Every structure is written in structure tokens, then in C-alpha cells.
Image 1 (tube, rainbow, N blue to C red):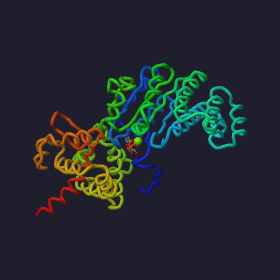
Image 2 (image 1 turned 120 degrees about the vertical axis):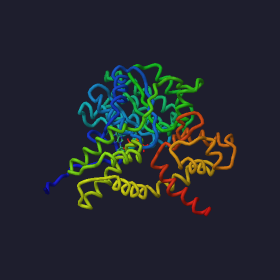
Image 3 (image 1 turned 90 degrees about the vertical axis):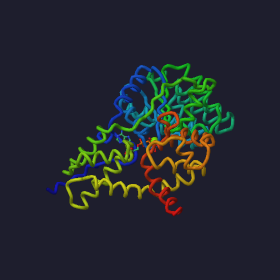
Image 4 (image 1 turned 60 degrees about the vertical axis):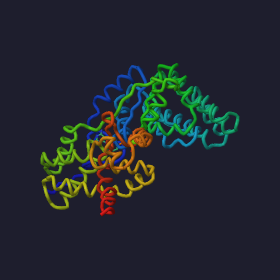
Length: 399
Ligand SMILES: Nc1ncnc2c1ncn2[C@@H]1O[C@H](COP(=O)(O)OP(=O)(O)OP(=O)(O)O)[C@@H](O)[C@H]1O
Ligand SMILES: [Mg+2]
């Protein structure tokens, strides 16, 4: 059969939607209710590559008709005026997109780069809260107001706009931990707004446990208990297995149960990794002219995948961690879960000397702590990479 198929088989990278987006029913249901009833704000916390951004995309799709859902990627925000620019523009664009209106965002954008006179005219054609906020930005350009006021005005605008168009607004700050580089001021502003306006809700998404603790769980912090917490876990095994099997079946490739077990064992249900592994399995099958996948194929594809991540993991390992943290990770890589006492023994040091490093590794979601005194590397693919590349090297060195 030589049917030409253009359909993508797996999706690696980027925000995915069905049929590539699986699981997360519970999370979507919960957050959707909160959005529709403007019930509460949410914090989504999860390690890298667990599918936070994709979840936001699907949340947006789930409330498309009812809510102005505005994703803002905080990675792109380098200073407070960026916060203003990205958020206001995104809100207006989402509004345009939803109501199939044209030209408002374009006219508004004049305030960012156009001549002051041109910009003033342009926004006066729009009027309302957009004209107001546009004028605020023009004053900022002329140094009449500072960046902090600009941030405050950003949140005022979101509320005014929501009231004006009479629609609930959800602002979803992705990679929220990036806002931590600004001073606390920003959280104080947020707090006063989160209290006051039921028409606007916030979703914060990120991978920093420390930020979560500092911003939302410390009793003296401005946003203390202002948001419900949702921890993103790996996708469950039965969902991953039936996904891989059904995707491969589209190309008349079968995969054994034991091979699926092996694939899950390696990837641990981390979406980015099972998509990647699935693709490599498909690619190998096509190249070998084979219509079935077994455990051996999974082993080979997985090794291939580790090699592809070599430079990235190498860079992460050598630049993101202190020497002591690197030693801890090496020790941890030997098993999925290890006791603190074992790690300490490996490192010939008292367990108490590891406390600070351990806490930092936990706060950055590098390490999990399933039980008191027990730890494991959260990302199993990274763990296996360390075990095979770093640990084995040192083992050889000592021979
Ligand atoms: N629910 C899902 N079902 C299937 N695959 C998914 C799902 N969510 C994410 N993926 C896969 O994982 C990849 C990474 O997802 P995404 O970018 O949403 O994760 P993230 O947590 O935002 O990652 P990062 O920490 O790098 O920002 C996607 O490109 C896709 O291949
Ligand atoms: Mg992301």
C-alpha cells in the first residue's frame, strides 16, 4: 500500500492540541470551572517539559466562547515596560481574534513605535479604555511616569477593559518564575488587583517550587493563599501506551506490550519524551522496513534519543549546578529513589552538609522528595543520561 499520508505522527515541541494532546482531563475540568465562574486564581506548577504551556493552550480552547483567555510568556519580559507591552497587546489581540474585529491592535500598536501625534490620533479613533491606556504609555515614552506606574496601570487596564466589553478575562502568566527578577512591587500590585476584581482571574504557571513557596505560601507574602495550586504530574501509563500504539497503528506499525512498558519506564510519562521516543520508533521502523516494534527497538531508539540530548544535558549539568549538586546528582542517578544517607556515604560527607544543595535542587524541580529522607531525580531521562555519561566516566576514571 503506497498511500501518501501527510499527517504528522507525533508532535515533539511546541504547544500541542488534540489528537496529540492527551490526558489532563481532570486539570482542564477543574480550571475550566474556576474560569467560567471566576471562582479563583490558579497556580500550575510542574517540572520542565511536563506540558505546562500545552495545558494553557488547551485551557484557552476550552473556554473560547466564554472567556478572554490571554496567555503571556514571562520569558519574553525583560523589564517592567515589557510587561505592559506584552500584556496589553495580547489582551487586545485576543479580543480581536474572538470577535473577529480587525485593526484595533494595529492602531493601538502605534503607541509603541509611531510618532506621538500619529499615535494619539490612532488611539482616539478607538476610544474607551484602550485610548486611556494608550495615552498612559505615551506619557511613559515622554518620561512623565515611571515603569512601576506603568505596571500598575496595566492591571487597571485589564479590569477596565473586562468591564467595558463585559466579559471575564483570564490572564495566564506562563514561566511565572521569570517575574521574580523584578522587585516585590509587582506582586504587591497584583495582590491589590486580585483582591478587588472578580471579572479578572489569573493563572500562574511555572517550574519553580521556591517561587511558589515565596509568593503564594509564605504567610507574609503579598499573594499568600491567593491561588489554588495544581501540580502537573506525568501522564498516566495507560494513556501514554494507547497513544503510542494508536499513532503507530496509523502507519500499520504494531508495538508489543512489553515494548510499551519499556517506553514508559524510560520516559516516565513525561510528554516531551514519549512524543520524541514515539517518533524515533516510527522513524526506525520505516527505515528498517519493519511493521513491528519490540523492546530491543525501544532500547535502541532511547539511546539515540539520549545522544540527541547530549549537548543540552551537558550544558545543563555543567552550568546549572554547583559542584556539590553535581555530585549529588551523580549519586542520585544510580537509582530512581535513594536515601539521603546513601548519598552522603557516596560523597564521604555528613548528610547535614547536603541540606542547602538538596533544598535548591528541590526548589528548582530537579529533584523530588517522595518521602522524608528519600530523593530522586525528577526527570528520568536526565537521570539516565547522567548515569550513562557522567557516572560511568567517573567509574572508569577510578579503575
Ligand atoms: N498533554 C500532552 N499530551 C501529549 N503530549 C504533550 C502534552 N503536553 C505536552 N506534550 C508534549 O511535550 C512537549 C512539551 O510541552 P510543553 O511545551 O507544553 O511543556 P512545558 O512544561 O511548557 O515545557 P517547558 O518547561 O520547556 O516550557 C510538547 O511539544 C509535546 O510534544
Ligand atoms: Mg512551557
